[in-house]
Image (tube, rainbow, N blue to C red; front, top):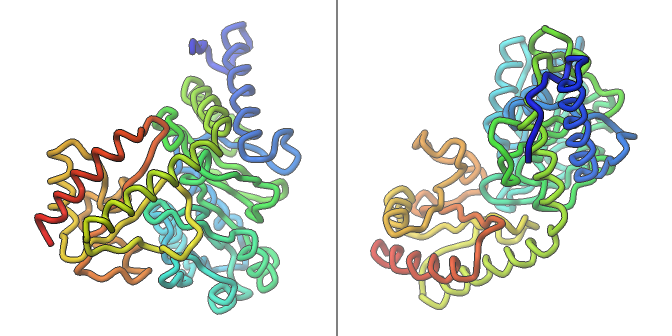
Length: 355
């Protein structure tokens, strides 16, 4: 797709064409998230999910003059948790609500954690490691009964193009997205901001995007994300069914081979594109490298943070035993039945070498 190199802030023809590209991408993303005509909010283009999460948590928190508490789930992405930590540098208190073995927070957990001083609540829609789907609208409603002016931020980076999203019904004031989770370009994302919700920008500049995110727009990246969002929603139901089949096939193969393992958050409602398996007696990192050496690429946790070599806070939160090594197996648009058959054979052989 050829995109004009013009600056969309310029009045010449190349700039006008670039601006048109952004408008097209904005419409594509808006349709993908259930707000096709922008009736409920606006889209702010960012550099990715991390910046979008920061704007939704830290940016919203900086607008609060009285509230001084931020509440996050125990399984939030580091982009959310670290933004909350930055609020603590401004004198805010941080509290986590538990998710238990199900990997999903409930209303009772919100009631015990949110109070009248809470200004920001973060609820992840689809977890990036175990794929659990949170009841965001239900949790947001419970929080607003306690703190009516609370800003609810939702990290939906792993949700767009994987499950149906309707921001008008989600109950959030801001929602974060990223292009690379949709087979789109890396280094571009978006924040949907509900009408009436407020955030404070991180920097000043040329006033682009109504001053909420100044800087020359990344036109090729934005155009790519818009198209990726549109394509991801066109065959969503077909991919969901196919990915569930892949997960079922992997689980069945491991069971038939007599491996000692568990499906993490097995009882929860989960998105189909990620399968989290914990193998008894198998250290995750050596297992991962054995698989990689034989052509199977998986991760031991979040791909964003696995190089840290620290125990996964998500797996700790849901009580996965330390003796179990967890693999995060994800399925993409191009994954085939043959890939799953090959991966199953290699995985079984590798796990048997440890158990």
